[in-house]
Length: 486
Image 1: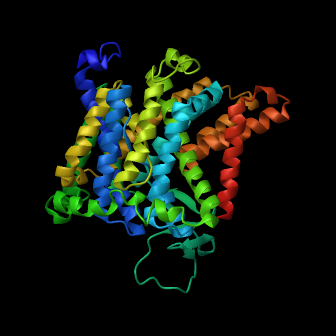
Image 2 (image 1 turned 180 degrees about the horizontal axis):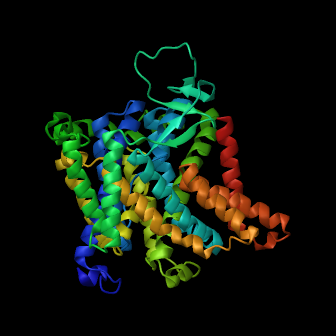
Image 3 (image 1 turned 120 degrees about the vertical axis):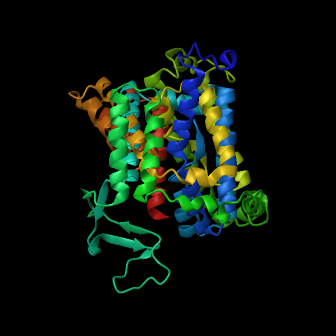
């Protein structure tokens, strides 16, 4: 194990890697239950999505660990699953089988641009100041996820700012007999701190204080201990639902029965064949695949740059080798390929884009430095199929502290940015802060790219803009225009 993962060379131990794997798993375990809840709205069987989520996450993460030897975990991405459901199926009218076919093709496209070095060229085209901004922005994003999951915030919106309810125009006189599944409100929404009267927000606050104390005291495995202790405290507080242990709906047998519905559905008559049956839809299909790919690619690139540079997981030699390496000689080569194939694998089993999770930062913050961390996460995903009720015991409030504090650690990258130089500060601001406010790594990167180009052009330094950055920025703008008129 020492020889395969090169633990000493990477300054880590088996114990540290296992702790990191457990930490990453618990920080991202919410996707196991959230993904089926979102995708099942399209008509996909919930238990089938549950199992395909586990399989896609386990395979993708295992390849990341064994092939690339880096501590990153993969799973169907948040945001990408919402795009799958609310935009591709609900707004554009594709069936879920057709949407899976597009996800599969998106994976093939990602593999192509990885093998042909296009993806690596994109990474190399990003200026160092923007790389630091992306790193710090990942910290902002991760911390915001933690704050949101903790229940520390409440949002107020006046009726005039509500745009849609259940994906239909808002009507103040309407009643919703089947309940409300989604509400979209405009910029008039106002955030505020909660009064800490609910057990959930109180538990998250307790967990945050406990984890802060453990970290400041340099306790080994502080983040994981904080998650476990907070979960235990949540039982008498009524936040942890112990009844999930006996829920028959979580049985492995029912999940495998339903998996037959989604497995291979992307290639059937209602999937790939139906998708290309009408030439009139071809431009829309291509643009939708492009939108899937753009978000997937830049989410992953942002996560690698944001966490790998800061921790040394990807060394300077790794980054320099991107220009000259062929095949899969560097960690970055292998990690990008592992991420690319995971999306197509997930689509085969029946789930939306599988991508590298930003919550991997929690395990990296706990000391994870090699693929052993990823292997631990992959094994836990597989075991979850047998013990899913136990994972369901861990509430979002128990993992929120780990995300907040990992975000705090990552924000030190802001020190590398020259904030007194507007030419550098403006793109860095939009890349980092917008990442959290828009709740999207790729949109934050898009904002940073766009303003970097604007600033350089205005300053008469267009030659400083890498050709790949020009193309990436134009594609982002095109994507926003297409989404505006869909």
